[in-house]
Length: 367
Image 1: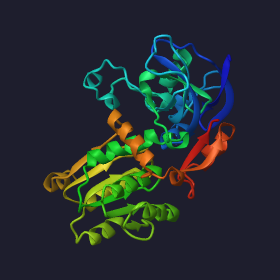
Image 2: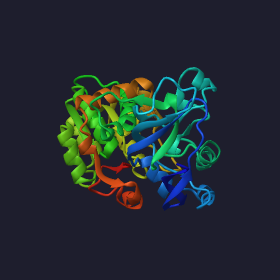
Image 3: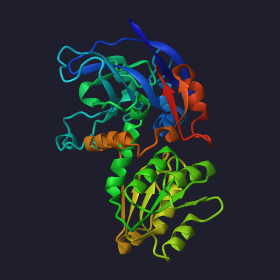
């Protein structure tokens, strides 16, 4: 085999199925035959909101490949790789830290100063072009992907490729919830009930958080949140979420609020979260905003209220291992999250429906 099939991004909102040369495996690398993948809001942001400078770098001759939530099996390994064998079923950690900066020295890999990622999950379009052109590392919207062996998580028996494709996003969610440190009896709120918000709801519910409010303008997502364990849901188009949260907490506010709504909605939801948080409460920014991402904040409100405002990005190995166990236990129903499903050849249609009212997380079957 000299080439493999991949979905090539050749410009802003321009994608085509093409062939890429099979790269040479260097020390520590493996070749993964992909089986399942998902579209992530990061993929959508890179596809629909490329700045003009980044878009100008791309063409049919200089493409990149998106996709970083994926599972598959090891097809080949470099001669020095002995910890994992061909045929091993795996999920992929897409982050590519430098392992040399001050953060990497402390094993804070999500904070790496030189962080890059498979499928442009981190880094710039220019970084992705160099990764593909010089190292043969593309993204997961493809038949194959080259990955450092240390970026693989071996799948236990009983977990499907469909389930394993959710390992990476669920690990991100577990990092967020760990940072929020929810406690029994507290009121928790999740702004934004897309796939990531719904997984927050499900995990929080499984931890025994019973006062759990979800906020989203889409009815089907609010209904899913109730099915996943939310005790109450709010349509921000018909009710003020701040007023609803204050009313539900005797005017005190929620102890814990996660902002999982990204893009243009992130700033509005962050502002509402800060107005609806209890004194000594914690506001967690899980999602990112479109640039420019600055917004006015009442500093005294945070100061006098002893409010914690923080964010999380990525995950650590413990979160991935926990995610695999949660999926194995059935706590997170993959079929309710990963729907609908498309093939690689249908990637353009998959992008076109992502974010639609009745879509949670688009999956790809790469087999």
